[in-house]
Image 1: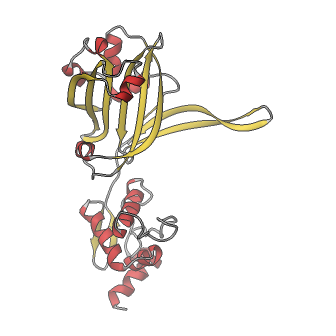
Image 2 (image 1 turned 180 degrees about the horizontal axis):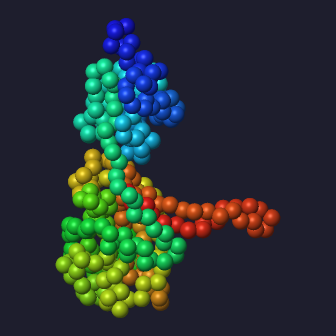
Image 3 (image 1 turned 90 degrees about the vertical axis):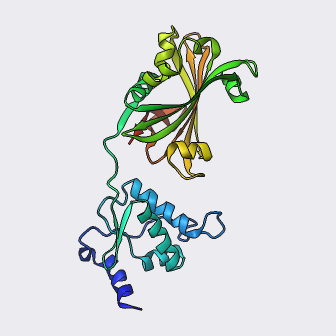
Length: 293
């Protein structure tokens, strides 16, 4: 073993040697304690994604020193060259700084205070997200309703709807890609310029719609070429997918939206209460909301 390799190993055991906090080895990994060659992505990319997530989530905060190449290689069951490439990718992203004799230090400083709000069955807080972020309109047109939108809006397949595609950003960083469909008779009350100044819910209310409720599902998806370009991500990046149908006071569907969110910038939160019913205990939702970094 060379002197440099010995020094690299010793830094994990000697936090004071680097001038910063040395992080322990991660407690989780792909495939148990090893990266998996059976997965489609290269081994170095799997390790890169694990470490990147820990940095962006502040589990490895700014100023900390990552475990050395040998320790990571042993932990994940890969070669040192594989780990080196993963760390080099993190450095290329500006998330870490690599220095000979000092190791790999996290340089990512995280993001500002989060916008946080509870929705609790009401939609006013979704409006607040619209006013506190910046919008970019990518597409605006009247088109035949695709099957999913037609079903959500209770329209015949191919009925005309207004389709708008937008991104929302905070501090210049895009975090969501939104595709909305509105029945054509409601959509005619506002145009593309209006969508740059007000959230869609506010425009519907200006048109006389009494927005009352919504139903939504939350799942995951991967970024295609267009979405990846709009959100400044790699093709195939994981996204949080929210599909929501908004209803007026008479239960008419007035909007169907598919929202794709960067999971490093947006999360959905839920508070639960422990309740007893019919002799059994269960968790019941108390409040829900979003958190936008």
